[in-house]
Every structure is written in structure tokens, then in C-alpha cells.
Length: 492
Image 1 (cartoon, rainbow, N blue to C red):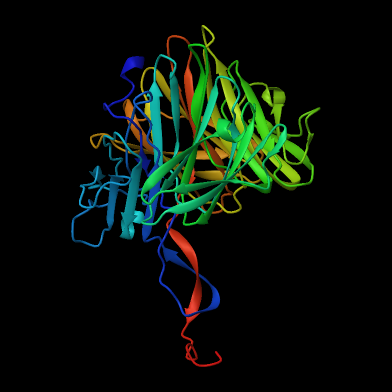
Image 2: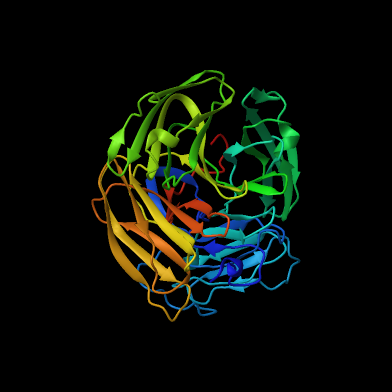
């Protein structure tokens, strides 16, 4: 596959389906005890579509079963998995329908956001990813991320509105009624209209866009909070930078968490680039942040950077390039007040070209669980790598690679990462092409944080994108219930 032949299909966006994040559970009269685990029965995700400047490809898979799943037979109790254009008129056929939940499903996509619906057993273990690529021109980039479930709130750090930079917030509403959203912003100078958040109405089964330069004109660093007031929305942020005609980076910024303890990474090795850590403190108290760096050789507090002070209401930037001398690294942040954070990876190329990628800070996993990402690529000029961090405890598990080509066998290999270290695992499927990967912990293992990187060798320097592995959700907790015989009686 040559650089100009990146997309396997002449399509506009890349999507991979693997992990269910929402579920419908039976209603109950009265909570009556500890929670029960109920299987995920319905999942819905939205993947943002772009114009033809960033084309890509589409793939689908159910990540939950360790063994190959049986083909989906219409009318049997296997559930359904479909991908449709968001806002398509009733009766419009799906863009794709899964017929084998044990393999990635490659489909074409063009035009609008993609709505992914899974019901019944097919919903358990569903995740979605999108991947786009452009080898040349002002839009030169390799970009991708997870498709989003509807949520009440999301946090994004890493965008900006400086000259030559355009960050755009995409809001998608898959419901039958309009949604109302509050968008609040912070910059390096402080809160942006803190008492008057921007109100955005997202049409039913439609999309709205918010340019960050309209919220904080000229700001070099912008953090955004998205909060649904009515309804729920799926959100995502795309960052694009250019200087004259030279591309200066483009990629999706993943949503992160607002918390006192965050893990940013693991991040891929630097290879001559830089790692810029951005931290926002949306509250009214300054943050004192303790930094712990997890590397292949162990964890430590970086000399001169072990404690960071971030003023309240601002977005600060710290050059973390020297924290681990170019090796793969996870950064643990412990703050005395809630913070949100993202690492921006910068790779220089020839002729002023710059590539960028983002890894958001998330709450550290407390319990081990399966992780999955639906889309990775392999080719003579494309290298995918799995980065694993065992932040607090040893991780032991199995890595499964599942090619999209049904003629190729799936493979598995053991993975062991010692507590307080990181590891980089080259991903080598049986043949070039698209494949999915699932990381499953062994009994007694500690939790892991994992990121998949894809590097595309181009004439003027490599393009890169990263995506955190999603947690495979097959069940949700619901409180135990019992009939309430007094329900509806006067005074009850």
C-alpha cells in the first residue's frame, strides 16, 4: 500500500464498531438492595463525518466474545447491529448491517454523521472508532478517535483559536426531540464569560457546530465544557492548524475527565518531537498538581516538574518532553482540586510541516476489565503499536488481533507489564490491512491503561494519530427492586 492508497475504499470517514456504552434496563417500582448486573441490551453511538479533505474507511466488530461469534441470522435471538446516516428519512436502508459479529465489518460511508445502533446480544461489547487520512495538501493528516455515546457532560482540553488554528466542536443529537446544550470555555487568560455560557440548540436527529474562535478569539489554549440542559448529545472536537499553505497538524481531541486524579497516556515515544501537557482548572481555587511519570524502567517524580501550580480558571501548558527522554510514558496527575488535562504530541516534518495527536487525561481504572479498539492498520508504510501502562499493579492478560479479512485467522499473545511501568507492543497481524484488537486481563491481574498509535510514513515526514482503548462493557449495574404494594395509595 503506497501513501496515496491509504483508504481501502473511496469513502469519507472511518468507523469501527466494538463496544456498547449504553443499555436499556427494566423499570422498577422501588430500589430494594444492592445492584445487580444486567446485560447491555441497546447501544447507540455517533461518529462525526468530515468533508472529502479527510477521507477514510469504515469497519465494525463485536469485541465481547473471546471465541468467534455465530453469524447473525434474521429473526433469531442474536440482536442487530446497523449503521445509518444520522437524520436519514424513515425507511432509509442502513449503510451497513453486521452479519458476523466475530469479524470486523468494512463498509463505505459518505456525507453525514453515522449513527450506530445495536440491540439485543449484539449490543454487548460494541465500540466505534473513526479514522481519516489525507497524504498531502493543507489538510495533510492522519486523524481518528472513538465515536461518542450520548452524554450529559464532556470536557475537552487542547483546542485553540490562535492565528492559523481552527478548533471545532461537533454536537450530534440522535434523539427525536431537540437538545439544548451549554458550552463554557476557559483560556490561558482565564474563564471566557463564566456567568454566560454559550447556549446551543442541537436539532432532532441532527448536528450543530461551534467554532472555538467564536468563543475565545485569539486564545492560544482553550478548554471546553459541554453540558446538556435538555436531552443528551454526542460531542467531539477537531483541531486543525496551518501556516500559509504548510499543514501544522490536525487530529481529533478525545473527551477527558474532570477529577483530582488523572492518567494521561500512555504516550508514544517522542522520536524527535515534543509532548505538551495542557491542564485546566475550571474552579475558583488554584491547583497544586503532583506529577508521577511511568516509564518502561519504572515510575518517578520528574526533577523540577514534580509539582505544578495552575492558576484557577486558566489553561496552563507544560513541556513534558524531557520527562521520559523520548520513551513511551504515562503521566499521573494528583491535584488538590478537580482538573482536566490533555497531552498534545507534536512531530516535525520537512518544509515546515508538523503533525499532531492528542491523548486526554482519564480517571485511573480501579478494576481490571477488557479493553478494545476497533481500528488499527498494517502496511509496509503504516505501523500500529499498542502502548500499555500498569500504573499501580502488575498487568497480565491476552492480546487478540482480529483481521477484517475473513480468510485470515485471528491471533492471540500473552501480555505482561510490571507495576509502575509501560510497554510498547508492535502490532503484527497475519497480513496487511485493517484489524481490531482486544486486550483481556487474566484472573488476578491489575487494571491497565492502553492507547493504540498509528504512524503513516509519508514523503515529508510521518503522520500520526492515537486512540485510547475503550472499556468493553457487556453489563450495567441496576439496583435490585421489589414490588411496593402501597404504590399509588393516598399518603404513600
